[in-house]
Image (cartoon, rainbow, N blue to C red; front, side, top):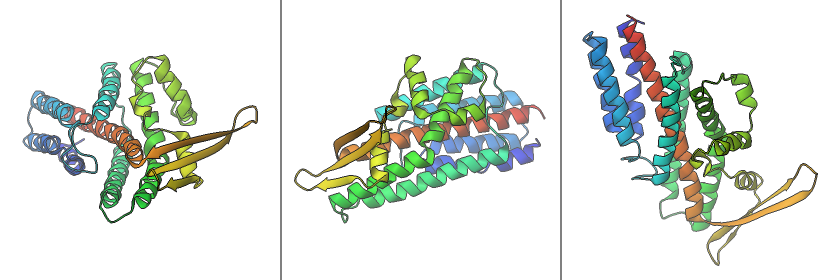
Length: 280
């Protein structure tokens, strides 16, 4: 790929990191663009890319903008887990982990648009005008949209990196058919941090989807119910009360996973551009 084409593609990425509140990482990408425009030696570009990676590792746990701000231990744990899996995968000489340029840019654009829209909704719900019950409804349906929109994709990406880190061949068609509960069992069996699953509650998702919840004004909680059949065709009832803060925490944990995967996917894609420059 010609340096001019690489610069054009890299020019799309600083905004992604600025929108995520990762200003120094965004500026590091601009440094890469400037270096490529000057036709620097690859060793210099590699050094700048290493600086970009280090900046992400330092900056990611602390958000300066967005719906959920400040240091968050769950966010750090998610990033440490997934970045470690990706690091092992890259070390095993998987040079081209991302997809085509067009598809990768489409994936990132879709993810950052969703994150932006979620942030707008969350900030609206945090304003004093809505009642507690209305906030419950808003954050509950926001939670369901995250589970339906990106969670399964996020987990499957993490799973594919975990398998590749073991030097295991990954059949993407088979990956699409793997249940999230099976991936959860894989992480548990391999004694990995289960942080990426902490925001996932399939009963809560089902309850919201079926409108099976009722607000209790006495203690400001929402009672959620999910009726489901087991493999023996026996009907079960899941019933649990949550405070508004607990529902917000579920949302935050899904955002942490989504932003972790988005940032690392972007980092991987930018890495591929640096390798493309080396080949010139």
